[in-house]
Length: 491
Image 1 (cartoon, rainbow, N blue to C red):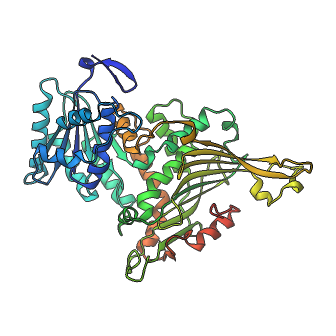
Image 2 (image 1 turned 90 degrees about the vertical axis):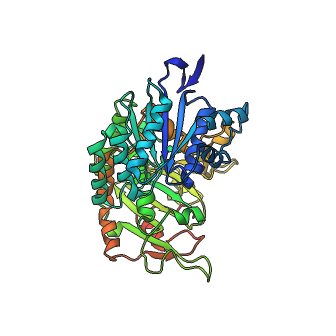
Image 3 (image 1 turned 180 degrees about the vertical axis):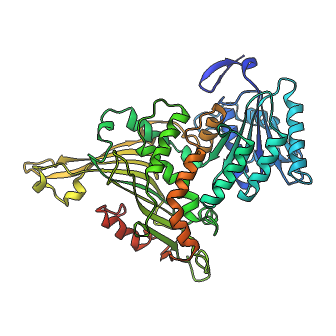
């Protein structure tokens, strides 16, 4: 039998069996994201036929109970629906359940026994996906390391963000994990890094000669990384008091985008080569100064609802100007902002180039010269697109210039369903591709950048500026942008 898996055809009996255990299998994340992503990979032929899936949690359930729980969340691709029902049945038949029992010591032993029973004498490679609260990670991981690692294949551990609360707690967690696992076994999951926009960062830059020579302080005036969300129940639950937008979005997602955008050319596409270049960027970013940071917290939506917390200074908005202290980027501001409760859902990167020196058309611009600079925009939300702002002549007998956008809109160009970010990243774990997962030294370097801000918050030295839900955020952020000579996007 020939199967199309992992991008090439292989005989099924040559494929090493694969076991995937989802720890915390009955939680919302597992039901609505992880199992649907696993099914999508199975349906599209990216999981071997001899895959087995194991759900593990505290709840007393049977195999049938788990299958019923996740069945309603499984859907087939919109662009190909062949054999959808039979594929769902086949996927569910490969799904099994183990309850924790008295504690994780007992439960993980039971999980290992179930996996060995179904894997048989040949064994299997194993992935353990920890969809558990931060405080439970170390206990579960230690039990897996001691009682459930296979000796007949590789073992990989997936840990969901956030990765600690600050530099100290993150180091303690990392050190403890590295006592039990090798670095190459650890995959720190930030689902936003599985977006197509992230992969396009390096493709656009390193595979197009038109951009690479311009990618430095010599031609780039500023860079903006923007992630804004409207207020929703999902976004509200994402920012508990212990985390906030800094720990949830800025530490991993935003700083990883900056690192991928600003890194030097890696010697290959190997994950370690890419991570080597990313960590150099993160180590080159200076610690944030209070004058370059704006914190915000959205107000109540109505009279019968309170703000995020009357006693909390947890930010729901973060804006800052970063500087990368190396030869390529010295003096170029990287303006980052992330927040919820804002006017629109937007995820994009804007790279603004310098003015044309001695521009002979300066007097022919119909607007400010600052608005006439070239700009490269990589947009993920609301619509995935690549936009380039260029100056052109307005049709007619007179000579007037206007700024227009050259637009590659993905939904018009490509008639294909975009895989969910969890699909992308889980497939990377299976393939052993770790370039979109933070290594321990990247983790430490990112915390080092943010530590002064987090310390100020914990000491109540700063008070987030309140802003209206559905607005553009704190006024202070607009002034920060203006200080660096950058037009606010919504304006």
